[in-house]
Length: 361
Length: 173
Image 1 (tube, rainbow over the protein chains, first blue to last red):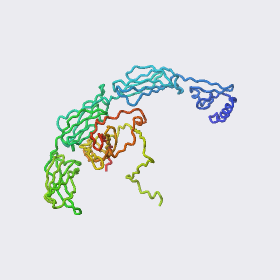
Image 2 (cartoon, rainbow over the protein chains, first blue to last red):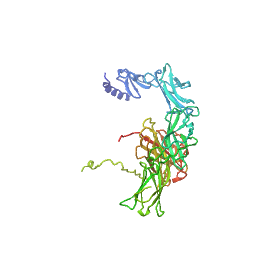
Image 3 (tube, helix red, strand yellow):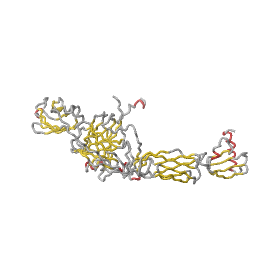
Image 4 (cartoon, helix red, strand yellow):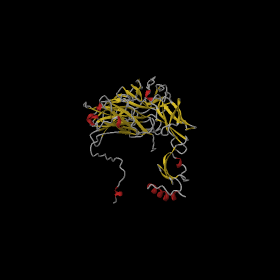
């Protein structure tokens, strides 16, 4: 008999059962939480073993019976939260136990739960679950957890306890000498250990904040590797004096002096002023700004220029260098010449004069 | 002409602000994050940054420097501004206009609003914060004095915290 051919008979049976006349079935049928099935049906061999309360409908009448779950067959283990830190709050280890038919095992089934270096503890199941709290302990590392009951045990679970980053106060190794300008310099931090001596894991981000004597600041990210961290700073557009601190989570290191040797200029920049055809103004170009390191002062370097006309009128402008040059358009006329310029960059401050339009220096 | 033919193309500058029928009265914060282990580049630093008052608020300027070995693209600066009471008041983001190649740098400029322009609509209490679907208490906010730049009332703020993120895609053109 196929499953489909059962349907009309079961429908009639159900109807009669509702009238209080459980008749006509040659074999027993069962109602459980999921519907009706023939107890002898070869298509439902597993369902006959489902535990719980059910009603058996037989030719002689209906009766209720409870199917108890079988012995432990499968154990699943879960251990969490997601992040366990050394010395931090406990985590829950929970084992789910099932019999061969997938039923949760009976209450009060003893289960031995082990985790890391803690002693095994026997816990009784409740609704098929046995759980206990696991203290992370004070050592970071990879640990194993397991659960066993009867002659079965679950697959091994792995969990990691990470260092307690919030207990680490970073430090910065002092510079031994000023960093050279326009070079990559490294600020290193000594080994980052938490309160229990665990080294910080790889990939933890830190922020180094440098405050400079001229009121500007620099922000440099760093990442831990092998329990240490290094920050790479390109000494560009940085004043000579400053102090740097490192921050990790809510802790900040003490300030360490951060010094940069001054980039020295080579010669004086040229100045060329040209009258614009369509405006009462002059296009002024200053540069190139050459350095003793053999290159132009970098793109984006700050520059401030004060122009003083022959009548004493002053014009101020600032901006950034591009290709070692600075260009500005100013509302000056031929009678304003000669122009005196005071130019300030990271190479220092220089005074320049333009005698007439189209001429320089 | 059909409606489809009238469509001239995608306009990336088009922005239609949301319209609310009435001013919002309450606020909640729902944050979700995943830990990514790839395409995260921490090779960009900010050199010689300054923040000063401007006509319509504050202006943050400086030099973004690529100290790593990858091409940094879509370099994003996130500014978190703390109010006079030391609590976060405003967060804003700005981008460096160009890709930055290893060892190179690019100036940036980022406007920030004055605190007087900001209207606090509602307080977000700890119970209104959900992180990754969990309402469990989150780590207390970091003390604004750690890794932040004191503003001492500039623009109506007490401190500024900056973070930098970037991608490493190099389109090769």
